[in-house]
Image (tube, rainbow, N blue to C red; front, side, top):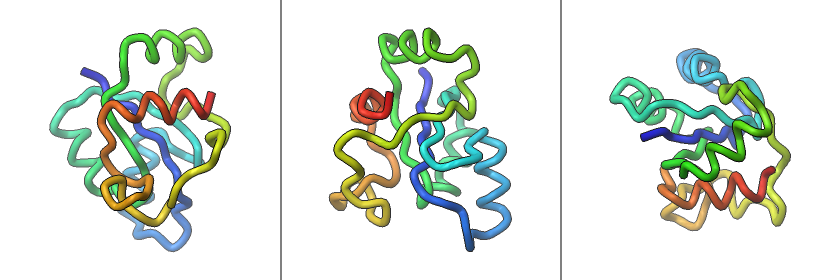
Length: 113
């Protein structure tokens, strides 16, 4: 299983370990995307940066679309989503956009392509 991770907040004022983790994930700018394996190591990294990114399980169809657009799936730049974000300061379960969102990540990526 693969996870799609989208950075939606700036790291200005963030702790150094958060900034370093974002760089290790390949998320250098806002609206950038990385596709990673769903290992415990990556899940721990995602918990550390959960206030700056959103992630979920990417479908095979979406992976194919992303590979057609760009061969490198780490740090891929996307446009802001059509229709905008709901809230970049609230979690997904609290009517926001941050954190784990499951299969709904595919809909967000589709709006950003």
